[in-house]
Image (cartoon, rainbow, N blue to C red; front, side):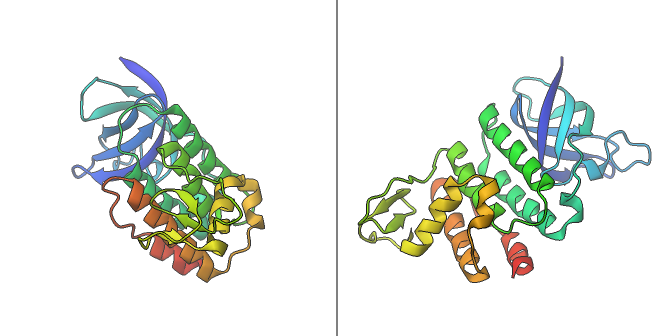
Length: 241
C-alpha cells in the first residue's frame, strides 16, 4: 500500500554501484530505512543531491510492517532550501546537528511532536537572515525536551550549579564532575528557554560557546544510550572561531 509522508534525511549509505540505503525520520512511520535504486543514473527520478544530511522531503512510500528496508515511489524536496546548501556556516551546522540527531533518534515509533520540532527548526535555520551563531546550542537544548531529558529551569537564589547528570540546579557542586557553574548555567538555561528569534541576544565569545557546547554534548552522553563520540563539531568550531 502507498502512503504519503514527510521525511528528514539523516544518513545515506552506498548499497551498490548505483543504489543507496537512506535512513530517514518520517512523520508517519518514525525511523525508517529506504532502498533507492539508480540514484547515480543521468535520468534518475531521485538524485543524490536530494538526499543530503538534514534535507526535508515529501514522499510517497511503500510500507510493510516489520520490514527492515522499505521502498520509495516518489520523493521531492519540500521545501527547497534557499540558504543551507550555499552558506558554509549553515551547512556545517546542519551536518553537525544531523550527526547528533542520527545518534539520538533510535526509535522506529511515530513521534509527530519530535518530527514537527526538527522540521520547523530546520526551516527556520534556512529562512533566517544572516547567521545565528548560537542556533546549534539552542537547537540541541530544545531538542532534549522531545527526547525526554529536558533540563529543569526551576532554581532558587542559592542554587548556582547545574547538575548535568540530574538535569537540575543544586546549591552545592555534586560529587561527580558533570556540572556547570553559575555563569555558564545561566547561559545554558537561557538558550533552552528563549525562542530562536531571541537567542541572538545571548552574547557568547568563541571560548564560552565552545565550553557550553562541550557541556551539552556531555549532557546528551549522560542521557542517551550508545550516544558515542561526535566528530563534526570540531569542524563547526573551527569555522566559528
